[in-house]
Image (tube, rainbow, N blue to C red; front, side):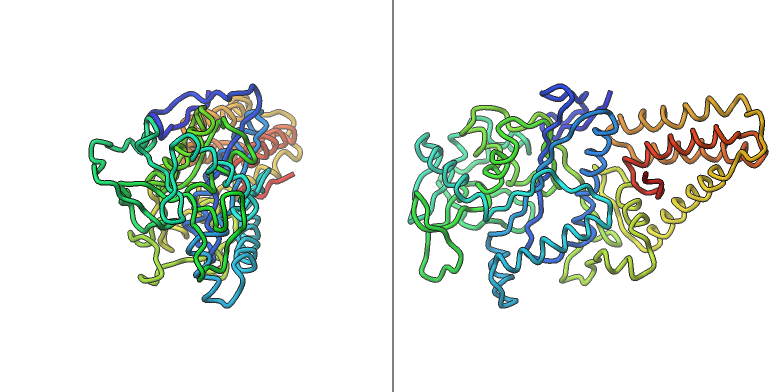
Length: 415
């Protein structure tokens, strides 16, 4: 049975969907104000592997991946490029999906946007105001976390540190991994200098980031999800805000399983423009690596452990993948004139599938699953060279690998 590490309970739990045979999964999407880098894609790749492995296990996966296209950073970036905010974010969104396709990430069932869920966000704010979780202050609306029982449960926040003096935080996002100990904004009331706003039932303005995601979740997947995913940075402020808003309104747990992927570092340091160490997908493609090489590097390290990128490490993982492909090619051409297979072959074919499932069931351990697969392939390759693998055996091996490649998408064996 598939076991997943649940950030909410901090334990590996056996996965069981709410509805038999169906999984509702929300993958916390990007703020599309700039070009994504390879660190951004690591999160979406672990989520893609999760979705593909659930489907490999027979589940139907309904997934939403949202775009935050209206918030302070997107507004500022659009102004910098002398473009309208929706025009600019549409451009960034197209690039994002184009590169996801190169990395063989499945498109989501739904792709809601902040700009197209304003009505849902306003509806949530109205309910929160009525319930007493939210309040008006100087044309803005804020959420008081102390009104929500269990606030901070995902990040396991120590609420005894919460200040007695009321504080309000006005921005959509804040840099760093520090908690804002106070009330967070839900609605930016209109100011004369504003260029992005809507006329709504609660007045002119725009929804803050903290209410946009709950609105998009409820708009597409409803009140109770199976899995909610994101990067580890979402454990500070963001996902606990989402829980507080959604669960205050619905009265139901937002998701049963919460999964968070760790960051990608470059030469041991966080990627940033100020350090000049930001790496884009096009940089690696221009350096001669294939999209499969890049995908493999980003999924080979366990998703919950930080992965350190260096060009030397990328080269070594690409070589490891190419060695596996070479063995697969030998097996593909094996069997001509071989009348009887070695008795060991049958057991090795079964082992390919058994070990893959065993390791993937262990919280998506792609590295161990791949390494075990290579060891088995090596034995099968030796038997093929010794003319102990029949054409029928070879086809069964390739069919097994094709099924595995439905998940990992790196062997170029796609039907």
